[in-house]
Amino acid sequence: MLVMPGLFCAGYTIGPGAVTKLAAAGAQGGASPLWLLAAGGLLSWALLEAGGRYTVATGETALHGFRNHLRGGRWLALLVLAGVVLGQWSGLPVLVGVVARLIHTGWEPTQSPAGEMAVAAVMLGGVYALLATGRFSVLMLLVAGSAALMAIGFLGALSIVGPAPELLARGLVPSLPATEDGLRPVVAVLGIALAAPTFLVRSLVVKRARWSEANAREQRRDAALSALVMLVVTVSVLSCTAAALYPKSLPIRDVFEAAQGLDQIAGRRAAGWFRLGAIGAGLSSIIPMIVVLPLLIADFLGEGVQLRGPRFFVLTALACGIGWLGTLPGGPLVSIHRTASLVAQVFMLPAVVAGIFLLLNRGDLMGGERAGLCLNTGLSLAFAFSLATSWLAVTGLWARLA
Image (cartoon, rainbow, N blue to C red; front, side, top):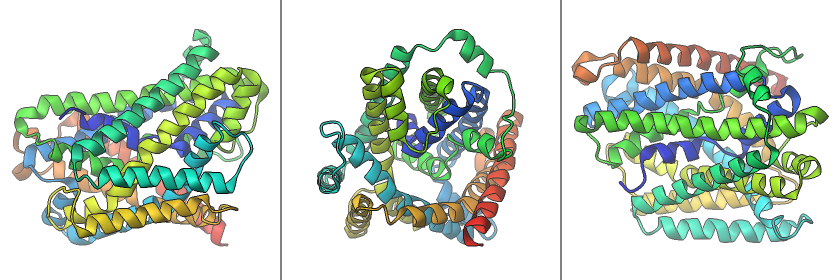
């Protein structure tokens, strides 16, 4: 394939929500969370490697493996699909609204709902038209190009801000923030690169690349590349905002406040590069979110990875329509997304990590590619972390519904 699966997964994982978390962490805690990003990068590598390794060893995708080889696997696979619907489709309108506003403010600083709705319509219409070609290579290039835009933008902003090396060195020393929220900020930063749908899609794109056991070494390098790209992007965002915004302790609630803070402190060029990176992050997440549900449904049914057919065209058109609703004035879908994402967070990551762990330790399936001590340790730590995120989601839901 012209574009490696790893770039697709890296682009899918880092969106404006992750950028907001990183910017807020950098503005409030400086570079101190850098060690958490490094730890999260290792856990992300373990899950990317696991999803790819299962596919090259068996020729099956992870979701298909859940259904066919695990006790109660059909229900586990359906639970994961339900989580995809909740998490991805509820978040799509919010994400589209953010990207449309970022693009619109590039030439018109004053917010205009009508202008943003037009931008979103053109953006989603263009994406749908390209997807309608039915070529998987087009999908990969779209996401990889957006991921490249993301990396260029954030690295450009970082080069202008120029954080001191000693600032970054201090961030690699493990420490826990003394905040009223306890470990919640730690879990938020650590989990930025750990998105359950990414690891399911990892298996799909590896299968579509037609990699087999002969490509096991190539798959390992690609998983490491994906984790490295995510680490470079996240470190760039955190380091940039830590160097520029931490001395002022600016409160950051979204990417717009982060860009405005950089504009005030580091100048328009830094803010412009940052906005470019945020647009790339949004586009590289929106495109996979539009296609992920029909792809996983086809995967569950054992139909293979295809970007054509009535189901694909209807579901992607519906996803684009739902995404466009995010530009409606007042952001009426934000509250729905926050609740739905918490519900999905309760079970999605634990279910995916547990399922892939069980599959990779089946000697009858994996043969010589069966998980060893290193990978099993990474998966075990990822599962422990997933339980922490699940518990925080439960407490968050209780607080919202109480």
